[in-house]
Amino acid sequence: MGGGGTDIPMFYEQHGANFVSAAINKHVYVSINNVNEKKYILRYSKYENVISINDIQHPIIREVLNHFNVENGIEITSFADIKSGTGLGSSGAFTVALIKAITLHQNKDTLSNSQIAQLASHIEINILNESVGLQDTYASALGSIRYFTINKKGKIRNKDLISENKSIKKLFSEYYLINTNQSRNAAEEIEKTIFDKDKREEMTKNLLQSKTRGIYTNSLLRNRSKMIQFGEHLTSQWKIKLERSPSSFHKGIDDIINKLIIKGCTGAKLIGAGGGGFILVHCPDESKAKIKKYLNELEMEIQPFDIDETGIISFEL
Image (tube, rainbow, N blue to C red; front, side, top):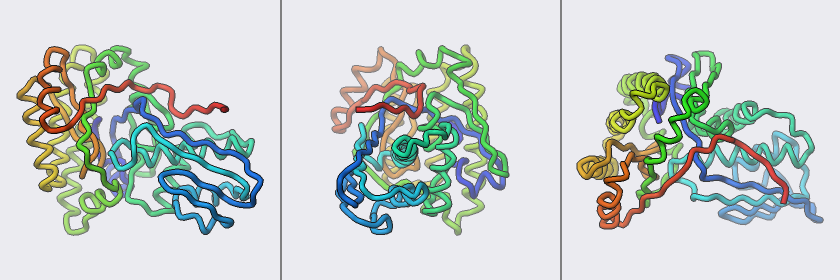
C-alpha cells in the first residue's frame, strides 16, 4: 500500500526500507497427514509422489522439508482462495503456512510468527535465490495493516496501524480488488525491472520516490482527518510503479485506472510486482453501480475483501 519495492535486499542494504503492507482475508491453506508409505506425497497445483526430498520438484516444499529434516511418510496438501501469480503474495503466504504446518507436525511449534516470516524470507531469498522482497512473508505471517522499516543491516521493525487507528478498517470497506485476468511470476517481473543492471541508477531513483511514499502512507493512515486522501495517494504510487515498467500491459492498466477515476473512484494502483494480478481501487458507494457497469464491459469483476488482523493460524481437522 506504500513503499513497494523498497523491501528488496539490493535496495534496503543501501538506503533502508519504509513500506506499508496489508493482509487480507484471502488465504492459503496447508495440511499435513501421516501416511503408511515411505514417500513424500504432495498435492498442490501438481501431484508429486517421491521417496527422496531431493527429488521434490516444488522448490519451496523441498527446501522447507530439508531445513526441518522431515522424514518421508507424509502427505502435504495445499490449496488457496486465489490462484498464484496474481500479485497478492501467494508464494510468501504459502511458505509461512508450510513452515507453520511442519513445526506443528513435528511437535516443535516454538517459532513466533515473526520468526516464521524471517525463516520463510531466508529460504526464498538466500536458499532459492528468488528475486523477491520481504513484505509478502511478513504481511502474511503477522496480519493487519503494518508499517515496516528495515535498516541497512536488515533489522526489521513494524507497527500495527489498525491498533493505533481503528478507523482504518472502516476506510477499507470501500476498497475493492479488480482482477486483470492476467497472471505472472513476481520474481521474473522484478528481474526485468528493479534488478535490470542496465537501469540500476534509474531504478534506485524510482525506489527512493517509493520509499518517500511509504513514509507518507504511514503518516496518512495514522491521521484520521487525512485518511480520505488515501485513494489519491494510491494513484501517485501507481505512477511511480508505471515508470519502472512502461510496458504495453501497464499502459493499458493506466488507461483503466484513469477511466475508473473519471467514473467516480478516488484512486487505484496495480498490486504486486506488476505484469498482471489485481488492481486495488477506492470506489465510494455512490459510484459503485457505474464502476461495475464499466468493468462488465471489460469482462472484469469487482471483489470485496476484509483486512485479516490475525496472521498465521492453525487448526486441526
